Every structure is written in structure tokens, then in C-alpha cells.
Amino acid sequence: MLGERRPRATTANTAAAGADDRTPAVPSAALTQPDIAGPHASSPAAAAPGSAWRDPVPWAIASLVFCGYFTLSLYRLLQLNPASYDLGIYTEYVKQLSQLHAPVVDILAPGFNLLGNHFQVGVAVLAPFFRAFPSPATLLFFQALAVAVSVFPVTTAGTALAGRTAGRLIGFAYGFSWGLQQMINADFHEIALAVPLLAFSLSALVRRRPAAAICWAMPLVFIEEDQGFSVAAIGLLLVLSALRPRLLAALSLLPSAMSGRGTGEGFAAWGDGSTAADRVSPEGYRHTALWGGVFLVGWGVFWTVFAITVFIPHFNPVHQYYFWKDGGVVGGGARGSFSPGRIAVQLGHGWSVKLRTTVVLLLPTAFAALCSPVALIGLPGLALRFVSTNTAYWGTDWQYNATIMPVLFIAAAEAIGRWQRLSRPAGAEVSPPATRLAAWVIVRRGVARHGPAMMAAIAVAFAFQFPLNNLWHGDTYRIDAHVQAADAAMAVVPDGATVQTTLGMLAPLAARTDTFWIGTAGNPLTQYVVFDNNDSGYSPAIKDVPAFIAGLYPHDGYVEVFERDYVYVFRRT
Image (tube, rainbow, N blue to C red; front, side):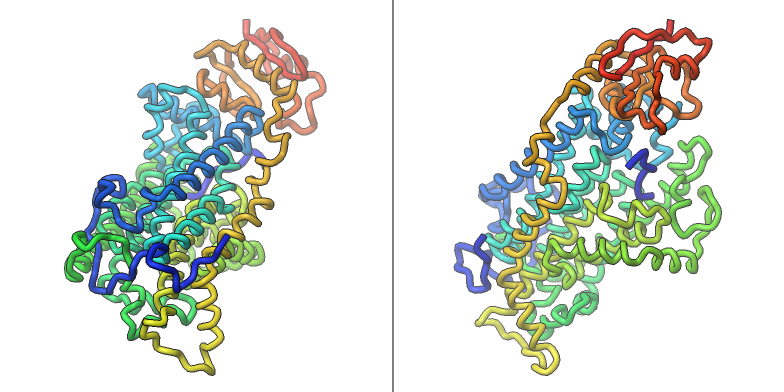
């Protein structure tokens, strides 16, 4: 359910900031008018004071995020150095959709319809752009753009809840968070489209705009089948915010969650940056949150169950859901049954790696996310990974942590904003018993005052440990003679031809030919074979490539038509 098999591996904001630096607190009875159309629909004059769209700093942050991430992924493509075969797979997938063909991706397996692998119909939104610009770089462009756009709702949430300076720092820390960097480093994945949807939905959620939160969450189910659980979690949080706000406070993992008791500043009193004209009655909020949340729970669960049991098996060549084998499931196929005992055992297996991943996930928010119920929305996806038998899902590599980033950073903004309101001298905070919680209150006040700056500092420190560090290395931009030879070899293959090739050239060739990954069982005879002996994937390395190809196809007339720097092209005569 979570991914594919792999071929290889500043100044701190204070609680006493002036009126120019923060959005005024909103009483608990003041609720925001739902904005179904989303943040783009509001005119500048009617935009919320906490909106990041009117602030030049988030625009600068988003521009840096886009330029940095697109540069990293583009040069990885230009160097023919993919992390896996996924970029080739999605290039072929979007190309087929752009031509109004069935999304058959021969790279994964000859004649394989990719809808039999994941429920990823939402990626079709990229097809018109690919039709105009048929290149794998188009996918990388929109992936970087999706991440950059998600900076705005995260910054808006931080600004509305914790003040402008805090919002800017939280948006900066989020934009360059390690989970997003790892997704960019792993070429292209459909989950990139879920990142801004989650960010917009949760930003609306914490600013008490339930209709907008619902509308942004609904398309998530079409990005990947497991996102339905996140949609259901958002719906459940909406229901609880309408019916049992104090229960939400109790669900936080540290005592600060209950510190709003008696003050009107608990989870149910999320601030917002709306204008007075936008506000509706508490009854209106409760009605929308309750029934909209119930709808989201049903919507998310239905699409996940439908995708796993009906849709994907229908398109799968053996009519099963391939990823049943990775979880606590007894038996294969769509009829596998869950074993609670096996799930419990698997959850504890490899606990040291899973614990490290959890700590590294919380660290970029200075652990403030742990104190907000919003963080619970990330639990379904994390639990699915940790019960898997595939160890690739447990760690910090690949794209699997990207969708948790907006959840955690918006959760941290909600917690910090709540703590700031509790720490105001004019507030009526109920002091906890000094013998039990005095130390925690001191920590809470420190994080409320300095947390956003800490998050930005952690992001800068992590930049030297994760892929963003490659921006400062000259090797990132070097196109050597071997890559030039591979480019020349691919130029020999005409558009529309059938070709088998090695890993590095899958994506560029898939954009304009019918491409197969060499060595995959069942590959048909193709018009061309393009072979990079420096990165063939064969072990041990092939010593005599022409002889190797002749041995694979002894009676099929392949002749060598190109050779340079260990890159070969063979044509079938």
C-alpha cells in the first residue's frame, strides 16, 4: 500500500510581540466563515490578516524551495542518475494518459496497467502539461512546485495562530524539512500531490474553517489508496472538535493539552485570521464540522477499501493487491485476512529503527507537534509503514515521510499558538500545582517564545545532513563524458520505437519511446537495445557487451550501431 519494490538502492518570536507582529487573539465564540473555494478565492481586500499570500517573505521562501528542489532533481535527471526506476514508470504513465491511452507501463512489466499497482488516478492532472512538454523534467517541475505551494498554508496557519514572525519561521523550517528533501531526492512520486492538499486542509482545520478543510481533503483519496485513512482521521478530528473538544485536549501526549481548561483557550478555541464579517455562530461551526467530519470518515474509508479490494485487483494481471504481502496479512490476494497477533509482533520488530524515525520526525518541530491533537492525523500512515515487513518503509529514506511533514508542522503551530495565548500576562491561566508541572510550564513557555526560531535553526542544521547539502557541491552540476555518450546513444533511437535499456536511461527514453527495462522477464523483442555497461545493474559487470547481447538474442539479428565510453546501441535488422 505504501510504495514500490526498489531496484537499488534569526530573532525569536515572543509572546509579548506587538500588534504589528501577530494576529490578535480571537475569542472562542468567534468562528470563521467556511471558505469552500480555498485560499485563492478570496480577494486581497478580504484576505485574512494571517494569510501568507499577502506577505512577501513566504513568497521568497517558496521561491527558494522551488528553485532548490527543482535544481536538485533536474540535475539528477541530466546526470542519468535516478534513485530507482520510478521516474521512468511515472513518465510512461503520464505519457500514456496524455495520449488518452490506457496507462500501460512496460517498464514495470510488459503490458502492465499501472492502475493495478496503486490507486493513483489523481496524477492524471499532469497529463495536459506533459502533452505540451513531453519530458520527465515536467514531472519534476510540478513536484517541486507542489512542495513550494504547500509552504503558504503552513505559513498561514503559523501566522494566524502564533504571529507573523513565528509563521514565517515555521514556514521556512517546513519548506526545507528533511522529509520533503528525501522525496525530492527519490525522483518523482505521486505522493507529492498529496503534500499541498494535506497542508491546505489542515491549515483550514486549525483556523476553524471546516468546509475548506473538507474540500481540500476530499481529493486525497485519488492520490494513493492509503491516503483514505488520513482523510478519515481529518474527519474524525472534525467530529471530535464539534462534539468533544475536551477529549481532543486529553488526546495530546503532554500535560499542556489540558492547560486550556477553564481559560477558553484549549483545542476548541483555535485562533483564526479572519475578518469579523466572516465569522459565524458556534452552532454553524459545530454543524459543519460534525456532518462534514462524518462524511470525510465515510469518504476516506470507502475509497481505500474500494481501491484495495475492487479497483486495483481489477487492473492487476493476477487480480490481487500486491502490497498485502507487506503487512500483517495472512494469505495473499484481495482476500487476505488480518491477523492482530502478527500485526502486534511486526509493529515491535525493528523497534530501534522505528524509534529513531519517530524521533527524527518530531525533532524538526522541536517536539512541539507532540502536544497537538493535529499530530494524530499522521498516525495512520506511520502505523501502516511500521507494521510492514518491508524495512524500506521504516527509516528516513525515500518519499515515505513527506506527507507527515505538513501534519507535524501545522500541529506544532497549533500547540505554539495555544501556549502563547496561555502565557500572556493579561490571560487568566490556571497555574498547575508547582510540585507536579512547574518545570513543564517553564519548558512550555520557552517553546512558545523560542520554538519557531528553534525549528528554523534545526532546519538549517539538517540541511547539511540531507540532500539539500548537494546544492553546494560542484559534482551536482557536472555532466561528464560518460553522460554525454549516453545522451548521444539515446539520440540514435527514433521517437516511437520500442527499446530495452538500463536503469539510467529509462526515464528519458520513456518520454518518447515504448521502453522496457532490460532483463525483465517476458520482455518482447524490441527494435533497439541501449546498454550502459557502467551502470547496467548486472553483477558481476558484463565484460563483453556485444557478446552478451548476442547470447541473449542469438537468432534475432541485433547489430551494434553505436559505441562510446561503454555505452552501446544495438538495432534489430
